[in-house]
Length: 140
Image (cartoon, rainbow, N blue to C red; front, side, top):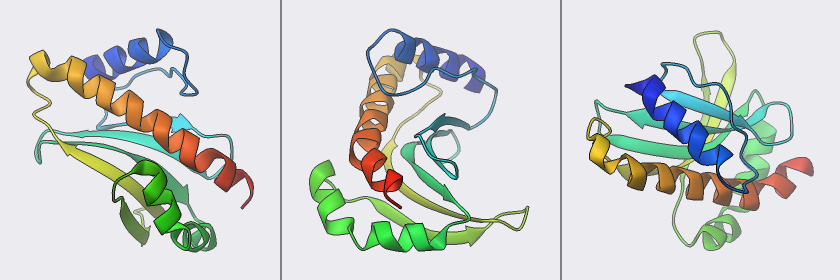
């Protein structure tokens, strides 16, 4: 199911004028997308266990960049017109630190009749993350 969902996601990206990149889909819970600077990427997630979609920015091994962005959190959230979830740097299995800034949506990803709505939501929020964060992370 994951690879099929991400294939449709990739196709949706290819069919529109967007800063998002169409990437090869894999049978994973996530789909990563570059945002123009090493160590930063947009990440899209589907979670069938918790019935949740997610879109966000992942920051790899740069706690200082996360701190600089969280200092701008009020301005960033006003640009989104919603509250975001700010996840402090956590150590991964490989021993690296990873921070996340995300927005989530309740969703039954096993219900393929809802995929059009879910895919639109993910693309729109991915574009918003790109719009709000691209220039900021270039300046870090």
